[in-house]
Image (tube, rainbow, N blue to C red; front, side):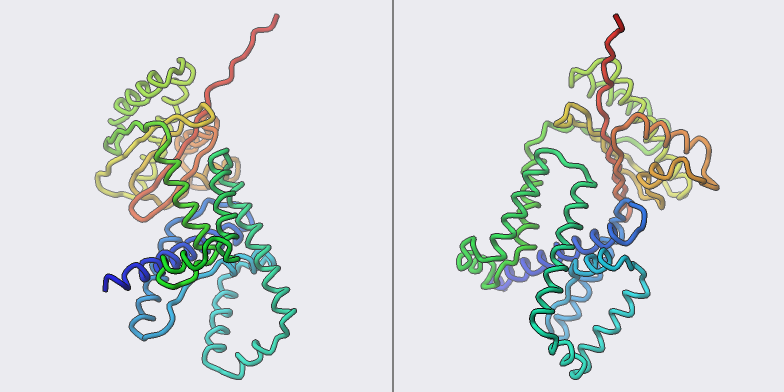
Length: 341
């Protein structure tokens, strides 16, 4: 058992990385207008992949796994319809059950297959670059992305101690996607551990918690050495974010919830505020992007809060999970204006 456990854990990590990357990539290319990634769908994809692997183990067959090739096809053809995906799944089932149909695919000439694979990999690379650029790039993230890419290329071509690494993985060769993904995870963990210390407070998700949040933000601004302008901006951003989350909580009609607020300095001299709260049905990042368009049913005070939040914050990212939402707000110090002579 203990001999096989590392191998099974490694295979599980491989499947999770590939499923997560595929689920995120397909969301990026399936919408005509950019939208925030719905991490609940990513969680469902990982759960479905796990269930498929469990059924494969019970049946004694090869494990299943999602691949980012579908994102490349959507990016190339511009077709992101779910019905097309269902039809493709039925076609794959037919290929698995009908030997003659599989023989037709295997009869495709090698140069044609090589061209198809080249175009697919090139498209996947471009999709990945777009995802990185859309999420924002800083020097640390650039180093992580570059190092992960070249580590993945090295492992894919067997240039990084292939025999030794295969022995560590239980005799299995390590492909580039897995090696690059693991390198990116380790690099991100290292960066997070070496960041400036994060201040944290936990309050109830209620309007009565606003004074506590204001006191927390004021202490953070004072400790960071910022002036009254930055302190006032952080205070306003915290208030508008809390009011927006409260509106979502009232719409969900849930019981009492807790709100975790964290604050830390950014590498660029700004501040990063994170709000971890109960789940909601709408994505704030998408709501802010849609401001100015017709929004029937939206409450006036909630739209005002979103507009103020868009004006005060440099960026707003909303990650939705089951039973938890993470709202990350980046706030830059106000620009100093020089008086006219």
